[in-house]
Length: 126
Image (tube, rainbow, N blue to C red; front, side, top):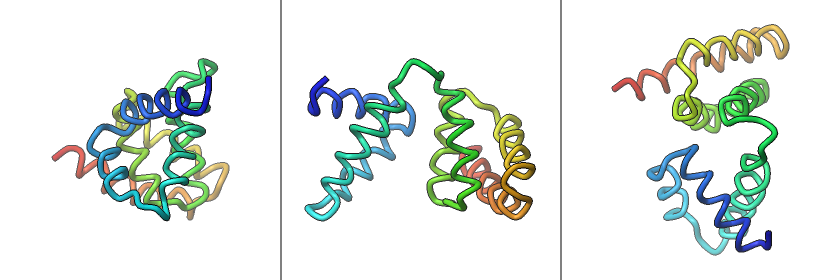
């Protein structure tokens, strides 16, 4: 694939995982300063990694939730809690991932992640 094709494939996966509304907001907020970064994440995160056949999207969501929780990336964690639901995880499975974080990344990381996930799940439930 060339860069244009990778970008198109990445945009398709990005929209499927994050939803059109999120992607449309990200694109609308893109300017000269952030355009290269948006292209980079679309081509590489979504067009290369999330598009690979080696893991299904549910598994990729689990891994992503765990890493974001461990690194205290709360804004991205909230976004990926929503994506995990879209990828078929239940709220109970999200909680299981965060329990795993507590064991391997520490209770404070999991405590913070549970707070973010609970609020996100409440918002998603309506």
